[in-house]
Length: 222
Image (cartoon, rainbow, N blue to C red):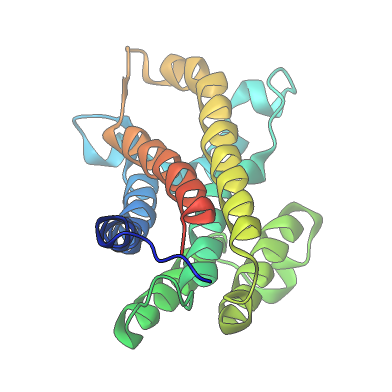
């Protein structure tokens, strides 16, 4: 004998799936827009520092060069990796019922985010040097996930939820904590107090939203 869920419960469940379906792309988009936006605001646009700039910018700060502030430089690229992998992993999930147009957008976003791991004036030889090996590995991982995205859609929901939630948590914590560690050195260079840019808040908000959404996705009833 089977038990049928009340109509109200079914309708409520469908609404939650619809909400998850459209909030995922919003959260990934917010993460990337915030990452490409100023983390250090300044009236002169040329003096604003984008989240994307930090992986290269910190190499030239005196405390970092002197070893006074220890950083994992590649950690500044974690929002890019997380956004790319998340887009690839959820694009073909049958629970979310994305159209082929939305799936194509997800895969395009995954590629664009991955390609931004390339440093300025890069060459294949340069990417194999110790300085950029981790970025090259992240790029390869993201592109491989994009190619295999239909297969990744077969992963258990709980595993996807845990992977995205833990990855988004790390992608929010590591870059921000490192950014705050070097902010005094940046402030000293500018010889004035600096404002935290709106991009920082938007990027972190997008990542934290992904944590909540992925956990909701993992434990949502069919």
